[in-house]
Amino acid sequence: MVLTVGRKAEELAKWSAIFIGFSIPLSTALDGLFLALMVLFWLIGNNFRVKYAMIRKNPVAIAALVLCGIYLMGLLYGHVDKGALSDAKTFLLIPLMITLFQEERIRHYAWWGFLAAMLLTLALSCLIFFQFLPSYLGMKAGSIRPGTVQITSIAQNMFMAFTAFLLAAKARFAETRFLRAVFGVLSLLAAINVLFMVPSKTGQFVLVLLIGYYLFDWMRWKGVIVAALAIVLIAGLLYRMPTNAVHVRLAELVREYSQWRPDRPASIESAAGLRMEFYYNSLKIIRENPLLGVGTGGFRSAYQRQIGNSRMLMTDNPHNQYLLTGVELGLVGLAGLLMLFAVQWRMAARLPQGQERMLAYALLLAITTGCLFNSFLADHSEGLFYVWTTAILFAGISSARGAGAES
Image (cartoon, rainbow, N blue to C red; front, top):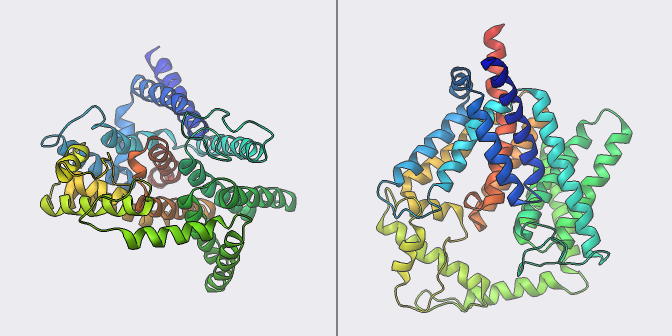
């Protein structure tokens, strides 16, 4: 009886993990529900000895646990607020999910669930952009942007850029010409959505980077030449858009950057100036607390002390994951984060399928680049996306090792 309950709970935990992929692009409330169900069923499923063996055999899971430990250590000396445990919890989910994605069928269902949600997002985004649907459909107040569906435009564009790559990879490895054509067309539509419909520079930059990697993986150094030509073409198309928005924005960025001064508050209307202000003050905090930082969850209070009574804008994150980690956990935490990325990069070469290897490298390129411009791992949707895709892609390592040991 106990074994039957445990098996059913394990299966329900796996299906909860699958549904998380579907809910990430669509609803934070839904993925919160599926997360809670997944953890609950995972605990009821018991069988912790087997789960421990899966985690112990997986270098990515171990690296995530090390970083989780650093975040927990930061609670001992930091300013603990209600969200202080969220980052530690984020990295703890990686080994937990890795135990659930051991079976290839579960990983297969999970990818298709995510892809279904992104194709739905793509369809709705196009309908909203061309005004067949109202722009406020499903949006939170104050966050409406053309073509954005449910989550923020930054998160949606990031996910759509990865989806364009995922569809292109499926086209490359498709078994029939028909499937190759379908996946290819959908990939092109997703890329167009990122470049021209949803305004987010991070997603656009990531897409261009992933196009370059795709062409390099496909044609090696010939692909680099093709990628360079493609980048020039895309840049030209963006520059010559009807409103010349890219040209205007670039000119604004140059002007805002040239006007920024570290000794006076940046204008609230200057996006580049505010970013430079956040970076500058964050680096000063790191210089004062270089080894261990100010503690987990301590960025807000440390930044408030740093700006004092000046008229500088208060922020709860510096819009840069590396600076956020450096402020809260110092060089130790930053080394832990970079170690996790390095382990993933090294283990990507050991993944069993060509498509999985491509996606693993693409994920790392997207996340490590996105973290330069946003505190991605501290944001709910982007952080959960990173955790979920990491678990799917690298669960195969421990399952492959387990199969090797049995044979």
